[in-house]
Length: 79
Image (tube, rainbow, N blue to C red; front, top):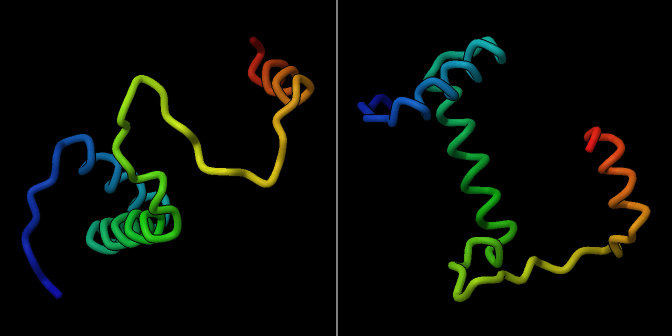
């Protein structure tokens, strides 16, 4: 389908970079990015909820984050 879109400058630049990286047209890159965004929203609707306060509750995960996890990430990031 052919249509005209007005994109924010930063979105256009990102889409153009994706198109060049994947060697596809700009339209195909925008379609892929939009499709990925829509799929992400439908897979995890709880992450799309607006924050109601100063702190947010993250969705449940199948793992427990330990001090060792944190130390490993700090070492990997060079912090």
